[in-house]
Image (tube, rainbow, N blue to C red):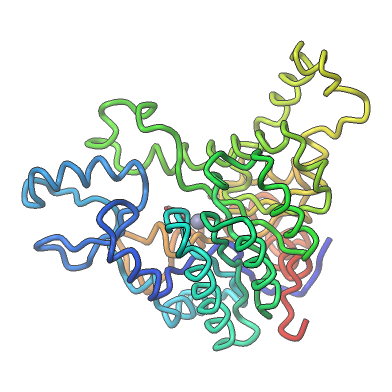
Length: 381
Ligand code: URA
Ligand code: ZN
């Protein structure tokens, strides 16, 4: 188990740098940033589930509702100074920052490579401003032509503070079990770049029922849609044999793997009882189980807010594969000062301490030691 003293590392923490904000401000369809009459801050409207309320407001006018779509754009989203303030307030020594969803998934083919390059340069220069405190997961131009996508991996590999890439579940538009992604996964693995897999699209809005938009806020898509999206994406990769084809590929899964630690047993049972897979010879003695892949190629963040989920994640992947995170700037406190303490820090840290014991080797590892070892977060590394 990694022991790097008691340093705290936040590996799940996002930024929307100013150039990206401008890009969203210029858009008419989601993702976008829009001002509404009477509202102090503009709003980020990024989730598919928010498109419906945006549509309603566009028809009826903002005055007709008390509930504006999306979330206010505060300085927490794009100010580096604010990120450092958040880190200082919560005694976070190092943050591995990443662009937030939906990354560059929506950018036109011809512009994707250049946009990614400028975003990644912006992340590198933020890290250079705070030596030893910031590293980053880069963003890939997934809509660019294949050779430009591979060139982007080559480019970010050369950025001193880049430790991997953040990736959504859509891939090139058909999910992460798409064979066209194999060269991308191989290039990432060859260059030691970890994938931080993060959800955005959730599940189709019909599954939330007709009352969701008006009555249930963002709860269902964020609490359930996000983790299920991640679970489904990784299960598809597993079934497609991606982990065997690219055994050096390392993936860090957001939100403690969605529901993968809880459902791995059921996935295994469905595999060994599937006549089609058995007949095709896919269930032979050499098969690596989901449990093995979880312990050999997968890392999980500790953004699950409760020791029950965290214990499942530790049981599934091992205490040396869990890494603390906050998901800042999402989930700001609503009834206390935003410049003060955030529940995301308090709850996730309490979950680690309850699961592993305050001050224990395990807690030190999850809170920072693992990330320092696995992602090599040493300034002169
Ligand atoms: N957390 C994220 O990272 N993104 C969202 O859209 C909401 C919560
Ligand atoms: Zn996040």
